[in-house]
Amino acid sequence: MWSAQEFTNLNAEFLLKRCLKIAQAEFAVEKIKGRYSGRISAPIVTAEEAQSMTLDYESVASKGSMLGSGGMIILDESRDVVQVLKNLAEFYHDESCGQCTPCREGTVGLKKSAQLYRKRSSQEDIKLLDEISLNMMGRTICVLADSIAMPVQVISRNFPKILNAI
Image 1 (tube, helix red, strand yellow):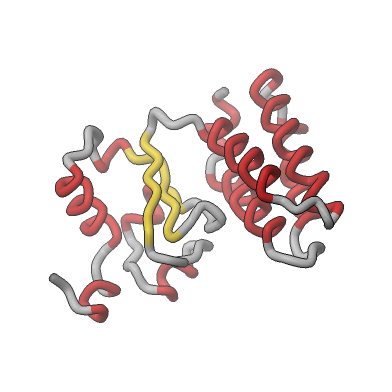
Image 2: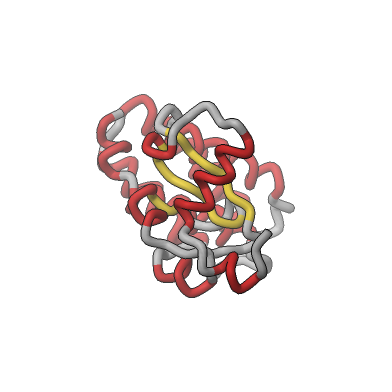
């Protein structure tokens, strides 16, 4: 096994390949679309960004994400990014206590916007997702609204080709 220092110096792609081998995963590293590093509230890192990243706080932060608990969620190329976004919005809406308007209404708005985007695929829908998420950031008592707003902003920024291809 690795020490904590050795672990943080590992290239994320190397560790991912090792984990996939241990898990006997069905897909190849080359087919990975993106990855959550830590938890679902951490912004998604694209496959290209992950290749040059080591698993330390500074390296992950330089890619605009967070290490969090160190767990990973892998999105392969069959994963629908809009569906991921919709699932996130539904989860956070269910978890919201409803006390703060930005969180209560924002999670509903994100879910509806993702559904509209699925039907129309317009740039206005991407802008609306961004606008809603920006209006949620830092405007609530707890960080639940921020936890959904950050991934939404990163999805619209990092996956525009995927979003526009729908």
